[in-house]
Each structure stands twice: as structure tokens, then as C-alpha cells.
Length: 189
Image 1 (cartoon, rainbow, N blue to C red):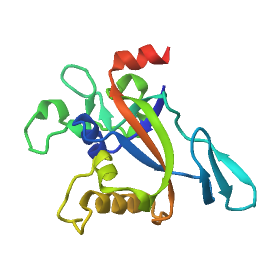
Image 2 (cartoon, one colour):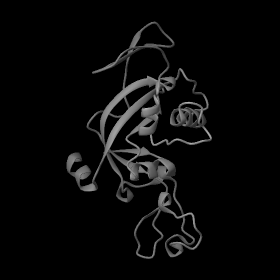
Image 3 (cartoon, helix red, strand yellow):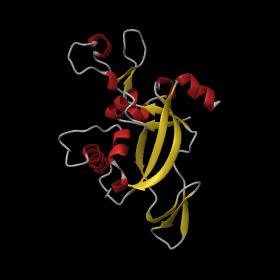
Image 4 (spheres, rainbow, N blue to C red):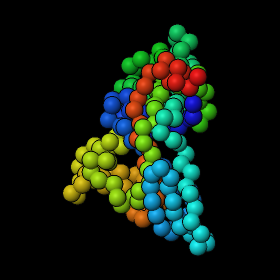
């Protein structure tokens, strides 16, 4: 079982069933994408040789979602910032003076969301379609609407997360399905 980080907005999208794919920056320097499955071949930016890219996850991998969390609740259970209500006073007993921990420090035992990777591929930022941006958890938002609303929102968000990214930057496309904690532990044993 491997960890994967998501911010509060994307955790909410997973919980609502709106997010079934995530894209992450390909860290290797690529000048040309050559081929896909079963192996991913690219031209190395710093030499003329061909390299095989190693994806961060493989089909069949089980992931546990790391999110902002705390264990300061009345009943001693974990609480998750993505669930924190916006209205003051609502569930205040659970969140009052809670010490939130960053997602990077979340232990596997605190995880409540488990994912099974169903596909991994590579594509450029500019190749995302409106349909794929919606699978990323983005919704039509008037602030970004200029034709492809969710797509525009996605591209702007990628450029915020990865300031070095351009529309020609390569991304890992990781498709997943949500599974139960029990199934995750059964599959990983």
C-alpha cells in the first residue's frame, strides 16, 4: 500500500464520487514521448538516448489518501479537515482547538479513503479534455468559463501547483477507483 496526497477540495471530490483520476508532474526531463503501454519510452532531454519512464504507481496498486487530519474529537476518533463545516458552531465540539496535522504526516491507520489504480499513462497538460477535467473533480465554474470551463480550471490549477509547468509539460495520468478499507487491506496482504 502506497500513500498519495490530496488537498481538501480534491478529498471532497473523491468522497462525492466526482474524482476518479489525478495528474502528477513527470519529474524526468523529456524531449519527446515515444510510446505508451506496456512500457513508457521517451527521449531524454540531456542526451540522445531513449529512457523507460518509471511511473510512481502501477495498475493494481492500492493507495491510501493522506489528507489534513487531527485526532482531537470528543470520541477520540480521527477528524478530517475536508469534513470541517464552514458554519461557525456546527460540530464545534469536534473541532474546537483541534490541532490539525498536515497530510504529509498522516499515518496509514488514520486513512479513511483507499484507491485502486486502474490505469497509468502520460500526457501533456494541454491534452486534457473537458470530460477528463471533470473526472479530475473540476466542475463548471463561471470564473474560468471560456469554452471549456472545467478544463480551464484544471490547467490554471496545475500551473498554480507546479509554477514551472507549461501546456507542453508531461503529466502522469493516474486513474483509480475507490475501494473499502477492508478490501484495501485484503488486497495488500
